[in-house]
Image 1: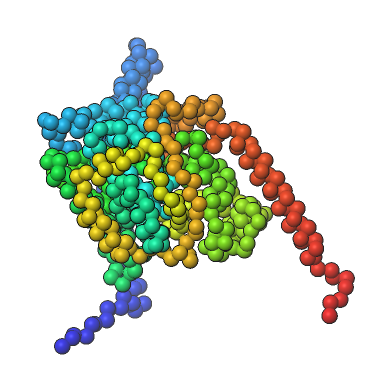
Image 2: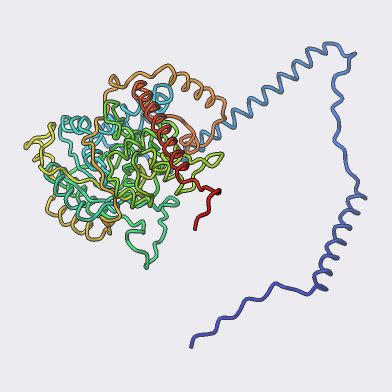
Length: 549
């Protein structure tokens, strides 16, 4: 028989009892004060100092001051040493060292020269350090995973990096279609059939619901797979890597590369089943390579983002530049993205009326989301930031169609395509992809936005190709360096969040003519929109002098 559950006892009490407790407490405090008064208070002895009649008074005071300064410096040094030891312990916990074998000198270099590399990265420019780290990851890897956003796979491919991997020798390149739950199932299948003709492709959906290291939040059974944070495609990718490792007969290194916000660190965490790499909504969180051993035979290396070339289109710069929303001009970036999207589906997705130009859309979106400035005027810049953050984030469902006719990339040919598939069990990979597509509940095509891809995105690998900074950027960077020097040494995570080591610092300022043209365009559009609004208000004005029947 099921026992009835007893109700919890009430904490309410009678006033008589409450007043009695308060009276006892007052008596107890009075008793303590009385005893303290009997004991008396010992006043601290005041330092009498050096009398004026004492000889060598100035020398004694100087010695005392120097002694005091030495003690303070010693305390400060001890504090810094403690912080460094804590950072080392934290790094050892999050990034356990890989045991180097005698036949693998590359792994030994990764483990030994890590501290030296970090010291060098702080002195030189972040863009050059990103190039160096990316080269190291490619050189140390036997298999390279190029992570693509399933919403725009072609725009996430970098021909320069793929060419460097192909020329690297016996390396294998595998494409990983991440965020596959944000596109319709038919679109995912068409992209998979298109990409499989060139390189081995894995359908993946990384888990992002990590709270602490080694702890995965349980998902409710009733929750739909689309809303849950369960990882898909992990078994297929691990089987692919283990099969390649068996054919090689030795331990392998797997590098993870890609543009910002495609989910590189999330894939590493999903494979490791721990939060070993920092993940977040902001772009470019990973600033240096991180070695994570999955087991004794497979080691995975997380890399920083690929640097976008400034010669790309405005849409590619807006979506692939690892910079904060405050650095890039939000109106120009959002305008470039909006020009490539289907206007009807944008209207339905954001529930706004039809618009004629992007500025009108930002005004309507600001009114819809309640973004207002002082005086009640709509915050156009805030609406542009909102659109840009949603488009580059991992929540908005949009998709792009693959090209109608398949053409092989110029850096690939039939021989290279055949070499890239050697050592992999392609039949088992196809079965695992089909299983993953069936398990993933993709978004509906009616609620998604059709996006026109701008094609392959050019990246920078060589340090000499990085454009020089403008004087404004250098001045701003010097001020930021001074501010960072004045701050005390903090934790590693706080340093990563507050540091301004973004690899694409204000990409739009690299083209002053384009930025001025964009400003003129925005100002003209704003004037015309304001004039149309005033004319419309005058036409629709109510005349109180006439009677309306």
